[in-house]
Image 1 (cartoon, rainbow, N blue to C red):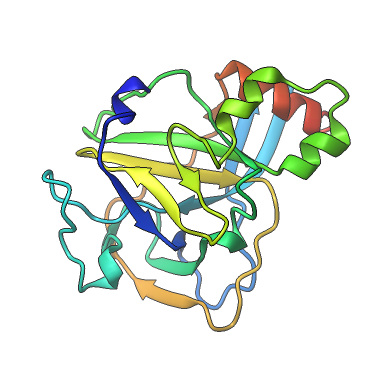
Image 2 (cartoon, rainbow, N blue to C red):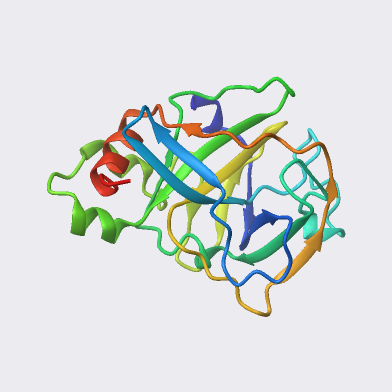
Length: 208
């Protein structure tokens, strides 16, 4: 994660949810998180990264407001304000893996799970000191301001997957965009390896 510290950053005020359906009133929970056999948790999948050239400049700022027009996930994007998904800078965004890994296709996805601060305060008897590093106000990967502006690092072929176990409503005036569909990536459970993510998810969702 150290290579993210000095990377240039871009700012967005919206995130997008990939789906093959149209007219959804709630984001689909199609992604599964697993910790061994202990936890099986369904989440909705969001992205925030725009389409950048290797120079860090937007490749297509006039098309889809810079969002990708090609997707391995689905044939549509539904675009909603960041604060409809990530509600508060006091909340947490924790990586699922301990390090950054490049996949066989040559790109790197950083997968993160979103946890609301009030859930931690209400449901965890013991606070986890290491959790504060992942608070959105100071997060080393993605940071959130109270006005909904989201800052992420720009590096070639680096993408972000934000997974939330909470229901996310989609308003009737949400923006829908058509994508050119590439070969569908097979849906498979995402294994949680990061120690902090394991502790928090096992504490918050013990019955799943």
